Length: 271
Image (cartoon, rainbow, N blue to C red; front, side, top):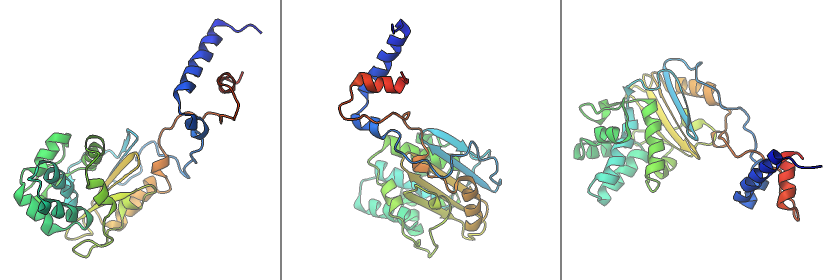
């Protein structure tokens, strides 16, 4: 049968595409297991007490109140730490305090660095474009938003891949320095590798959690307690494997030993 010109061009285009792929990619592109639950199209069902944002491979899903400025709690320690380790004096003391602020949410360490670098929160907000983030009289009465937290975490991963912040989030202690359990909210989602939590002095009034994993960042700020945040976050994203719910290459047939490039291209085209 005589091949048409358009068919020849189509074959050549697909051949060029296949030639650019690593051999293993052809065999494994369709090997990723589907998640038990797909990503939701939106977070419309999340109660207004919770602001929730997910950035998954560049696709952002957010509640309508995602950019609402809310109590920053201990989440703003992330901003102080980023400033101290990149723009501070480079001292070992700063780095030790920074690690404690992330892993065990140490308030004393936060007060030390906040006094030393009082412009840290606002400077980081300007650098990353965190429009709902601002410092109060001290770190403890500062404000941020769920959207700003996700923007910051994605920015750290993209712009500062050598930052210790993700590693410190992954090494968080089960119990914070003040005795609070660090075990709720976004940290309970499938695929999460590290989390920073925040809570008010009366933990029943406001809590926050911000987490990272392969290809995603997610944050929630709830005007309520840990159980309220757990309920809202799980209703929105429970059962979704965030690390495997990202866009992947189109499924391609396996490259069988001895098969020529033209044969696999014909297989793709179904001809």
